[in-house]
Length: 403
View 1 (cartoon, rainbow, N blue to C red):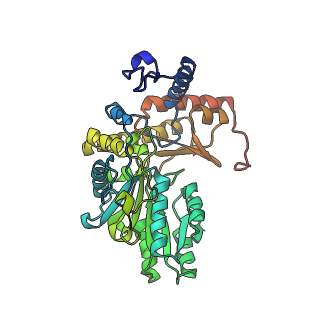
View 2: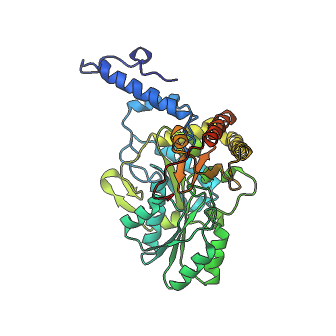
View 3: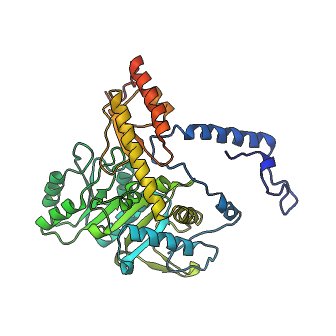
């Protein structure tokens, strides 16, 4: 476990001006207490997709530097204190896993999945300014916000039981507005159930309606680093027709900082690129100044684990998810998961259990996610608590969602 004790740090006690570089004891004590509190929560945080099994101590020296990846990672920049080269290496790996042609891929490291989705929808609107975005009711909450920010017309589509988009409702809605290019927001792993929208079925709808102008953005925040490492994955990537994809980095890879990758076809990005002279770079990203440390984190994880290591990690997480379903079923809890998903869904438990295990609730259900740091022992402790919860008969307080 890390410590915030001054005796455990190698940094100088005095800075270059002769002033003390350390906090006063009371402020250090506050940080120590906060760290201990968060560290205690770590092992019980199983409801949200954040892999907490990592060690990036080899990167700590870079925190002494002001580094900034301003601009396009492929065009260079006048601000030379950047990690663009490392960023490009990360993007090359993600491009390979998402099966985008070498001569038509572009991307950048984002601040997380929401920025990646914003980027895909931004490209789509620039290509089809008169387009309508179609997204299912199980789409992440941030998408509706993005659409409001961009003032993009949109239609929410019903979801099937389990979270997948309702293809009949989608087809009927597109048919009504068939003169307008559809921009379809495709979920590859919905937030609450891990459901995957079928890209082939969506493209079949577009073919049946003889629609040639359209855009397909894929939100693969969690599943984007699961599906490349399993046998016979469903259609989900560029080889299946995607125009852009958003994948999170802090989820399966693990990171102390939120991050992700936005990937898109280069031909799309070239339509929005603008040269900014004073930074000597193409303006192709959402933000100007960009985090130059997170590409180092992603690069470190890729080099440390390797593709064989990732396959082992994914296989183990899927096995732990299966184990969670089995153990919950054994105590009478109707738990389930989608194929190729590490999200385990079950009826909403008591407020006490939600709080202790930091679970994600929604209406009448909740879920846990078998991230790489979640072990069988973790599941056993959780199931023991769930069984006690059932025996005591405690129930979650009614909310507006559950009334």
